[in-house]
Length: 359
Ligand SMILES: O=C(O)CCC(=O)C(=O)O
Ligand SMILES: [Fe+2]
Image 1 (cartoon, protein in one colour):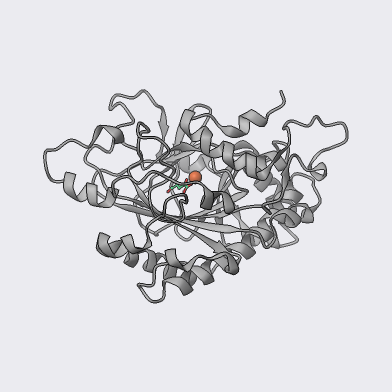
Image 2 (cartoon, helix red, strand yellow; image 1 turned 60 degrees about the horizontal axis):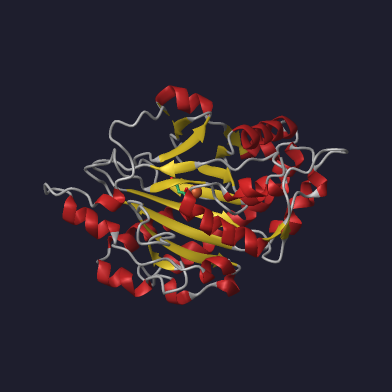
């Protein structure tokens, strides 16, 4: 993803280290991290209400000719109404995910000095550091990240790839190949589910960049005042999120003005539609705001894989996704401009995709 390499982030404190300093003492968390009022009136939906609401899609049912069209319909409706779903029976071996999570965990456990060898460099967000800090006034997220370009393999910049544990690079390689395969299959079913030619998205996404973002969210005594990741939409096509089985929950999705807590099922992927896919599908698949909250006593680690389209794409709704006479709902733009707008929209909190809307 060339843009991520071109867009730099102002260096700020390592949050893992900050958390170790602040937790246990009476000090307050620095003002720049306090983004919420403790008495905030947000509506949070959790427990059975959110478990029964957030769609679960069974990949084995998508593959089975006897159940495929029904499950495809469910998938399309999940992507339209929620922009999110959990995917079960996806065929990615437990071992592949387990190896990745183990190695990510090992990397993060090392002293800061060791991790700093993989730090972001000026002018790029690739590497170990924090996300998209573009001004000295900007509020900060309570989390660190490791951001890597992982597919195609020629695009890797190994300067940022941890070499300890020694299996780290191989684990990411194997995992990202599995996600790339799964992504292609899912994109076919999504297209089919909304009545488009199943292959229509493969030309845009097949063999295209996948990036990986490891999110590390330390605990925080003032968990009700900070956010691990502030509300955002993802700019890419599809996002595949994993967290360690048994870890605390942290992802929340916004729907109808309420925040729904995602209770991640063991072994499931949480998958969401990004802005690119919303535009390509003329709004039939929707990119929805989400955020990550912090636990007062427990850390949380998540790994997101972002599927990007070909970088010379002229982004506009695909004719294959529109029925005869359907209104085009988004203007067109070069992908480069679209991504630049995504990063600047972060500053004023507006969804940059809204700027492309024609009505
Ligand atoms: O950690 C999470 O649950 C959310 C991660 C996310 O939204 C992202 O990395 O874009
Ligand atoms: Fe996200």
